[in-house]
Every structure is written in C-alpha cells, then in structure tokens.
Image (cartoon, rainbow over all chains, first blue to last red; front, side, top):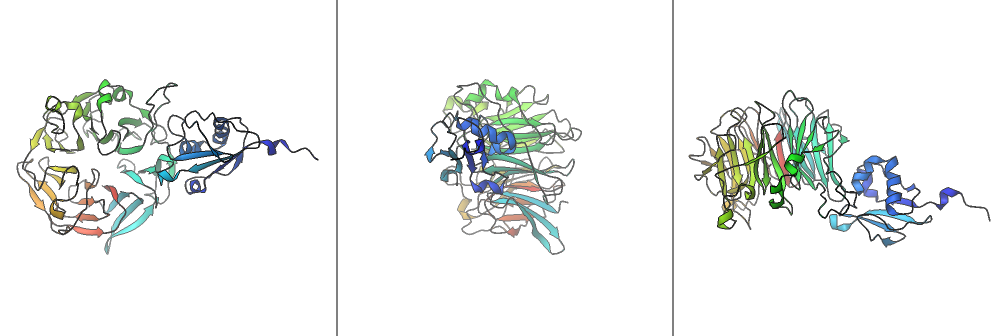
Length: 98
Length: 361
C-alpha cells in the first residue's frame, strides 16, 4: 500500500452553496485540530468570509451551523470541538434564519 | 429637483428614475437580500447599501456608479469583548447611515441595533465604535422598541457645524453632542412616556422616539414622532413641545421636516400599539404648515379602502428642495407627491416590504 500524501490527511471544510451568491467559498483542505483552528486557516486565505460565518465576537452566527463528521458542533462560542485529520467539516445555514 | 429614488426593501434595493414617460424602476440591486438602509452621499455621489442577511450578518456595500456595480466594504462591528463577558455585543442591523459634514470628505456615521453609533473616516473602509456614547451608564436602561434590542435609528448632522449631532434611540431618548461625538448629553425635556410608571414618565432615557427629523435650513428645529405623540423642538432638541393637533391619530413612525420651511412637516399617522395599521383602513399623510398648530389630512391618490400599509420610520422622505415627497409601505406600495403632499401618485404597488425611501442627489 502506497503512503497517502499529507494533504489527504487534513480536514476538509465545505461551505453551504448559498454563500456563493455573496462571495467565493470553495471547499478547502486545512490544518487544525479544532473547529476554530480549521476555520481560522480558511479565513487566513479568504478574510472576507470570516464575517459571514462568525459574529463580531468570533462566535458562530446565530443562524449558521457547523457539522463535524455529521455531528452538530457543541461549542458555538469558542469552537473547541475536535477535528481529526480525516474529518469532513460542513458550514451550513440553519433553517431558522430563512 | 431629484429625479431618482432609492427604495430599500426586504428583498432588494430598487432605483426609480423619472424619464420622459414618468417614473419607472431603472435598476434592482441585491435582489432577494434584506436591505436595511441606503445612503446617497451628496458630497461625492457615492451610494451605500447596508444588508441584513438572515444567515450571514450585516454587510455594507458601496457603489461609485449609482448601483451599476458594488463592492463590499467593512461593516460596523463591535470590538471583541473580554473573555467571559456575558453580553458581548454583535451588530444585528444597520438602522441609520448619515454623511458627515460638507468638508469632512469620506466621513460617515452609522447607527445600529443594538443601539450604538459608529464613525468611519474613510467611506466605510473601516469603522470605530463611538465609545463615549456606548459607555454611558444610561445605556443599561435602553430597551427594545419593535426589535428585541434597542436601536439607534436617527442621526442628524447640523449643516452649520457637523460636530453638532443629534441621535435618537428606540428606546433611549434623544442624545446630543456638540463636539463631534466626544461627549454626550441626554436631551428632549418635554417628551413623556405614557407606557411607563408615573414616576418614570418624564425620564429622558426611557422615551421611545420613533423618528427624529431636522430642518436643514433651521437646524434648531426638530420634529419627533414618538410612541405616544408628536413633538417639536426649536432649541436644538434640548426641549420639546407636544403637538396635539395632529389627526387622525398621534401614533406613527415616520416624520419628514421641510428642508427650507421650519414650520412645515409631514407625519403618517396609524393605529397604535398592537394593531399598527392606518386608521379605518385609509392611508393618509398629516401635514402641518404652522409648526404643529394645525394639520391637514392628505389622502388624494392614497388608498382609502382596506389599506393596511404601515410606513416605517425611514419610509418617508422629502427632496432637498422640499418639492417632492416619497413614501413606501410595509405592503410594498410606493407613492410620490410633487406638490407637497396635496396629491399622490402610485409608483409601484407590489414591491417587497419597504424599509426606507430616499431621494437621490
């Protein structure tokens, strides 16, 4: 078995497609062991995206939800939920905000 | 006389222009997005549009070509609060946008929900929270008026001296600064709040001012549409006198002050509190031309049967020369008057719910 490349062992962050009406938000492979670290990595490359996902205090916006491997994240304020190298992170809009 | 009208709605920003065949929608921007506020900056022709995206927060866009193209700039945001702070704020909505003085190129003021004032010195590229108002101890007693949190919805910049600011908050009364926002004084003596316990009735800080409008040529004259009445000041908002002659009711949200005649103003009365519809289902505008001593009820061209149009606090505007009025409703009706309100013409019947109307430069 051939060793997998490092990049394949990094979490992937995928954003709801409704964001594309406002700005580019492609799925991105990033480093990071927590939701916060993974998102910060995305925002470093795409700074404008930050305010669409997080509020003034760096919390998840009220009507944004994040799933890690199918599980809703528990810590919406500090984003400390763990992310594994193989994780799939989805940033979605909550129906409450529709 | 302005031949352009900006209409900020629940689902986009509409530009109407007057051409050879009359008024027509010339452009739609941000279709589908809530546009809470628009500013047509007379100093340099820049157009600003504030969005309140349901999921993705408050955004501010700027256009240098009257809305043909837009670029996103910075939106006002609260600084990060210390770790563990219980009520760390975030901006929910831009509820006021005003240009600074004629010689303060690029200077802007913004009012928000929750109630705060922000200043930009660079056409919205960056914003600073006006801490001198935010840190006032009275802020703890401001309360929601229509929204869960209090909001700053009116910013009057004195044309004689842009350091003289008058702001109004629902609910938090009227605040004055004469030094460009460095220090603030609560003002508005004479207003009263009949929804409060008797001992708090006259408290400046509890007044639910729905809208504050300033006469451009006589800036010491200001009109207030308040939750329980209408008021007029002739001393720069220090004191107000109640206007009791208004008909058909004293409740409403919008008020417009004639830019050249300090005795003329327009209101849009409605049934108060739980109902919030026009009196008897008839949409009317109340006009005074004698400083509130008497009123005319104007209805020519406005729907007079089963009309449930409510006009929000930014839903009435007067052109810079006082010649035209425009009014937009929650039902998506848009009307113009070209004779001071005597006769009205329907410009659009089915726009999305209208938050604000503003004449272009």
